[in-house]
Image (cartoon, rainbow, N blue to C red; front, side, top):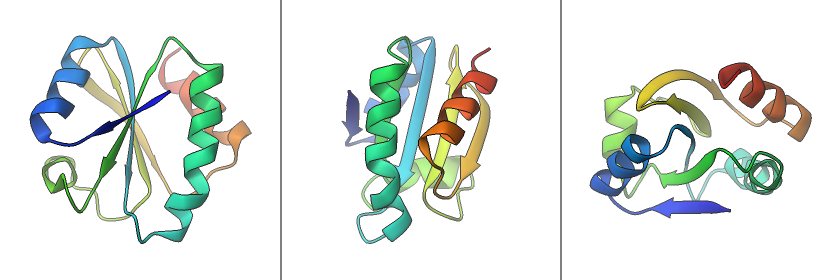
Length: 105
């Protein structure tokens, strides 16, 4: 399951209150973002110990500003409230799972 974040306060709460968080920073008009969405949905069903979030960069722009995100999709990895990694662009499921496992080892 992926939670849609609608404010910077909601984003901060999820990141602070969950040990492992993956954040998909996307845009509704972005083709690669649309391709990545079902991949992350599947990844969320395979990695249930991780909290998955979606943040629309156009409606919650504070996230993009805070983390200097210049391209979408960008996936951010947080552990214990701290940013520990990121990746940009479309990735197939196997690559996303490897990135997750590497980030949260």
